[in-house]
Amino acid sequence: MRFFKIPTLTPFVISQKNIKKSLLIINIGIFLSIFAASSAIISLFIENKISKYETAIIENKSTTIFFNKLERYFSKYEDGRTRLYDSNNTFTSYNEILRALKNGDALIDDREYYLYRMISEYYSAKEFFDDREFINDIKEFYNIDENELLLSLYDPIVHKKFLEIIRNQRNEIEKYEKKYDALDSYVKKIDIFKSVNDKEMLGLLPQNTMDKYYNVYVDLFAINEFLFEYLATFKEIMADWSISNKSYNIENYQEVERLSNLEKQIIIIAFIFQIIIFFVTQFFEITFATKVKKRIIRSKKI
Amino acid sequence: MRRGKLSNKSIFYVILAGTFTLLSYFLDQQVIQKEDAIRDMALEIENQYQKIDDESGKFEAAMDLQTRVFFSSHQTSSFSTINYKTHLLIDSNNAVIQNFNIDDIKRIVRANLFLQYILTRSSIQELWSAADKMNFTKSDYDNEKIRTVINDLFTFNDNFFEKYKIEYFNQSYINSVADNSILVPDNDGFMRLLYEETNKLNKKLFSYYVILEDLSDIYLEQEELLEVNYDSLILKQGKIKIQKNYFILLSILFQILSLLSFLLLFRNFINSTFVK
Image 1 (cartoon, chains in turn yellow, cyan):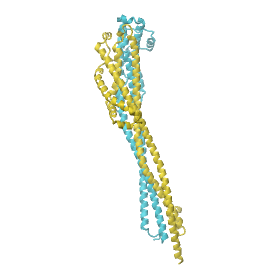
Image 2 (tube, rainbow over the protein chains, first blue to last red; image 1 turned 90 degrees about the horizontal axis):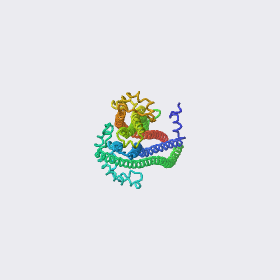
Image 3 (tube, rainbow over the protein chains, first blue to last red; image 1 turned 180 degrees about the vertical axis):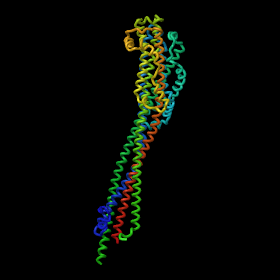
Image 4 (cartoon, rainbow over the protein chains, first blue to last red; image 1 turned 180 degrees about the horizontal axis):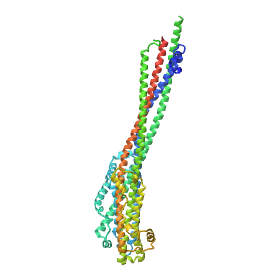
């Protein structure tokens, strides 16, 4: 294994005969190591820039997941709302036919006609208004600076339409919230599961109760219609924001790719510069070595 | 000394090479440690992701069940009075009855009252069966309150059914009522009982709407907490990966510098020998 030991090569390397070759080999080594070192430094410098974009991509990932989840929940809400609307419509249609019969009022009064729909509309609204934290989050979102909102949207020029809608809904939600709070105390006292006695069942409901059922139903229906619109707008904004977010992510990926390409280009340019410098220094060093060698030979002759 | 003394310059290059090699070894160790940390974190992230997925599944399952309960209960409520009221009107209001064929309406209304009870009971059983197959009811819960709520989900008092099981609530009788081939008798106010029991069952059914709402809120809360942790882990892992890249690059740089120092050392040897 002496082959790998440096002393074996010493006589060859440090001999006057091979001095030029040895210097050339070592200089090539030095050149290559300086090139490798400069490539590593360039990579470090570019890596520093890339890491900022990578962090942004990672941070953005959770936002994308949030948008997808929000869209799924909104779709569930819309699906439920549509099912309830259809179910109530079907029920009302049959009730209307029965009510049109002779003395149909005895068969279908406001209990059948409004009470159950009113209760279903109440629970539909309750699901939203019970979660005040969620409402406050949306309200807070609606209260953000309009320019800031436009900046976050995918196409601010096209989506200026959101501003007008938001301005209107910002006031309306307060109005409907108050309306719901006023109705809540009344509706939650009603027990629709209580069995009515036969006498009460056959008698007509008092006029004020019938009026109340009708008015409360109409109000709750209006609240839910508004909520549907309100959440649809919010969903639309979120969807647009989500596109903007995806586009921001693509920009980050493109920037990482651009920096990687830049890194390669800089390394190639650095290599070209270094090889030029190497040849120039090599020229001077070998010329100098030749001169010294000649001088030594001359001094030996003397 | 046969090999002579090392010059100051040579000693400097040796020290430089040694320092760079040591730094390179140190950074290599850092890379190994970071790699370990990344592997541990990847496992933890995977674990967290599964937990989030699990909680998300539980939340959506509870929410879907809640929706089913709502519609089932709403359907029962919507028809809760019309059938019994018509049943009462058949005997008391001729004006209304004149609109219908008396035998048909009597049979239909009684069948509706009978089947409404059976359907409400079946809805609860189907919901129990659906819930029983769901992931969230099979999990072991440390929280005793949640465990009790889930164990009691869609359970109900079935005394009424048991009482009339042989007489009325057997499959052949139910089938006969369903195809309108039989008139359900109103012995001992059986229609009133059906109306009341349906309401009781529906009340019980709707109570699960509130329970499921609370349950889904708990799952959502847990999911959100896990998500916060997951996000911080992802960010932490990203930062460690970036650090690892820096360590690799710096280690390479120090290795090169160490090599360069050796080359300069050899060059110095040659030059000094040559000049002598």
